[in-house]
Image 1: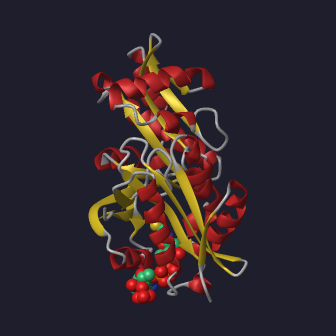
Image 2: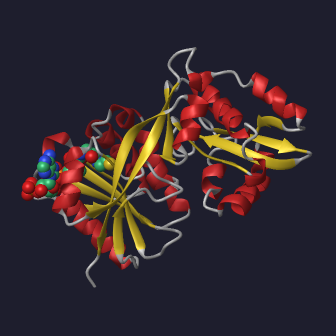
Length: 308
Ligand SMILES: CC(C)(COP(=O)(O)OP(=O)(O)OC[C@H]1O[C@@H](n2cnc3c(N)ncnc32)[C@H](O)[C@@H]1OP(=O)(O)O)[C@@H](O)C(=O)NCCC(=O)NCCS
């Protein structure tokens, strides 16, 4: 049967989420399918060009793809999500979707297409290696692997987990140095954004805005005499995901990061998360030491130069 590719509109978000629940073979992705679609489509469209494509066979939506242009590098197009109904695989649906996406991205000025998360709104850093058909598809369609990324998992499933270790003693120690920690509220957002820009280069505005005071998300901060020293945030891309976080270079090594991290993980556990994903890491020894986190999800990053 003929496959037709059309541009999707915002009212089709629920239909794409439903398709993703069936198509995403990694259970934790299927469970968060609505959040995945929301992150890369509804929320991403606010600050970058986003195109959502549907593959139809007759009236049935059998595949979907969301792609976007990097807000930072105008020449980089990104494929944020691609999913094909299990009953319609190996029939060229992804091939047709990716060909349309490449044309759409070229039309928006991209010179290269990346199968890589497009921060700040992303569902994965790249293709999880367990989506092996997706790895095969990328290779078949001329993409080359140019990097590897990984998430770490913090186990929140049992009381004695190192990720849930008490922060009290460390907070008392910090208090002795005049450092206090607390949950951030909406009023803290401008200062947090300014702090992140000044210390870490400015790509976390949207993730902070998506964390502070938003349902299913949150942020904790450390300060001394009203001066911010660090923050840790969670839930902006997906409820189970942790990050970003940062401690001012001058305040590193005092234990601030570990405290803020575990305060966030404790919130996530209280919200029912049993395994937090520390996305696109980062300092492995820090997360391993502070929360017993282990490297778990591994992603291959792909790119392809578009022909002129
Ligand atoms: C990855 C996915 C989108 C591919 O969709 P599809 O419509 O089956 O792909 P196509 O039929 O267009 O395949 C194109 C080419 O990719 C390769 N390919 C696709 N699936 C493959 C598989 N299971 N094994 C080997 N090669 C494969 C083949 O070369 C294929 O061409 P061919 O069938 O002519 O040999 C689909 O498997 C899927 O939805 N998986 C779950 C979601 C997912 O992994 N998304 C990415 C998340 S990071």
